Image 1: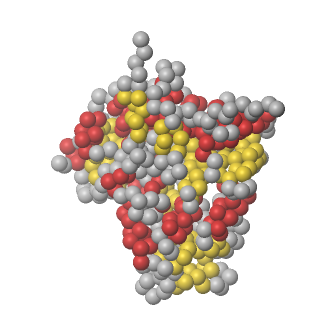
Image 2: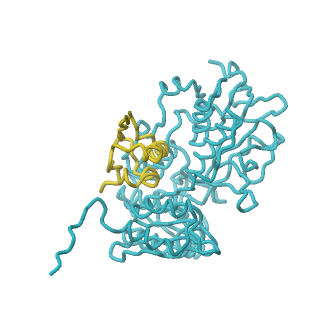
Image 3: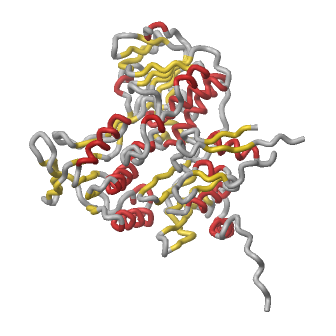
Length: 418
Length: 67
């Protein structure tokens, strides 16, 4: 089938969760035209969080993480063009040019091209990996199976999850971080210290306050040289130092770009009929008055749904009903954040020192709950949604936490009075 | 007359993300393996919207609600 056969309709460029949700929601909201998802990957859209976890440890495969099968796309009347990449956009003729020389025209265009892994400014020998796609993750899984010593550069959530997966695969893992604690700049020192303890307990060597000076090895990596002169021996190195939005192909198109595709609060770009969603999109946030790019699953899915509906029906969704939710799994511990961080930092409201678990809230200046963070306490997090939804006062938090930490589903007999 | 809706889960697909229990903590939990456990598979009419949101929130579509 020639790409040129797809005339007009809704074109979604990018096969991640934001793109897929856009297509699904547009159809379910009554979009009657053609819907096409263009993906540069050779396989149908899949769930990406397992790329740093269960794909690396071999517990999941393409089959288990594929989101919809061919039959389900046929039922939705969504065409997926795999293995072709958009190379440029012509907004005057409503056309996307492809790497195989073909063109696709559109009535509505949704840009969902995601991120690419940032690289370090050194020559990169074989054995140095990044993880953004299933192909990357499968290559790393194969490398981990034969590796003894692994160095992960960057202790953000991605790096920390990869380090944990490396240990589970039987490797000796060193995690290198430029800051003084993992994730502390984003999540605060309590969470950073807890993640550091979790990794140390599970055998990860953590090297904080350390930057990387280069790679060692001729052709294939043999080690990582640190700025302090130390050399960490390594069979496999993973670079997890952030990501850049995939906007290359949009340069010169007339779309407003600024570390992502700049959008209003509903995903509309400066060009009529063109929208952006997910990691590549920088939406306006009416709460802060500025634009922000989010790189989490829940935001990507919510933006996709909202733009899908907007394209299909012109209807603007009430964003207040959806609360950001973020999670990470490391060494069997679930770290969850519901709502938003605030500048006041985390206030711990519940702790179980024996288990090393805790829960805390992020408060605004009026002592109202804007976010809840739990470390190994999924049942507490699950009960806190109303706190964030209603922006409850700090005074109301204790009773919710108490109810969440009491034994559930077990009716204790009343104590006998004697 | 009320219709009875039933929740079901595909454990093979579940990745333990816990989105469902955040939406509907009275119906979903995680078991010791970190997979979804349906605590109460028959939501009442009042609970139905919350449970539907939970089913829809699953990133990997491991949940279904049938009536």
